Image (tube, rainbow, N blue to C red; front, top):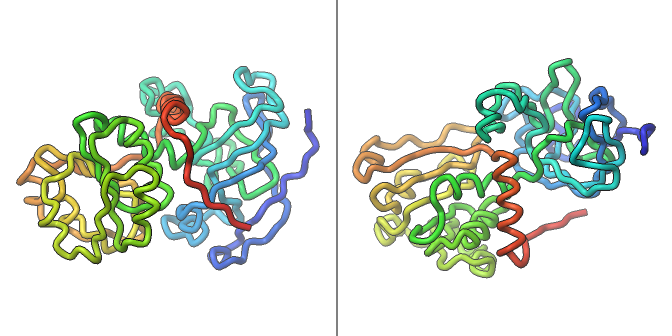
Length: 314
């Protein structure tokens, strides 16, 4: 079991780090607890939220910091109280690295909403030590940290809002979250999955991974009228400030649900309350998911999805 590895990674010291000014260096990890593991990182996703933290867009960042939260690697050290993971195991870490596992929310499979939750980076533990992410050689944190991010971020609202047979699902934005939304909605046997994007540049990709149809909102200027009341559930994955929410909501049928996953840095456009009242529309949001849902999602994907869309960069 390795205990003397050096923690090195791409460190952000100020807002300019988002412009490509990350610096490789060493940093001090959190103190190692008996419930912790150290992971030798082999892969780490790149997400828009990483840039938002680097730029201090959502809140002032706690510089210096190491970002990156879709982490995969092998366990190289495990505390004596770690029961379910051993050295050598291949593991993953998502956007949350700790919850108390004792409060009412945690006990009811809502640990992502725990008041003592610690996100994977740009946060601090109870002892004041920093949480750092996966743009690094090693990651240290709780062995109970939930794995993955994009998959569970989309599976949770799909499952909790009844995606499946007799449901027509729309997906706004065909990036990472949107692609997973399509794949998982199809795996849940939704009657129809409609992909939506401003242009047709991602049409082929969306249809390839299972979308039944594709709407180009910037090119089909009458889409709000043409496709009125044709969907039961919309998963919105985009974060732009000029989101035409009222037009998108018009696509929902009576008792439809609009779930927002994107986290824009600026306020979104306002809309009339009658947009919701006319058809009894429910408007909500969703944040990652529980460990229970993660296990369900992984099994669903293993049983129903032959491939996952990936992008690599160097």
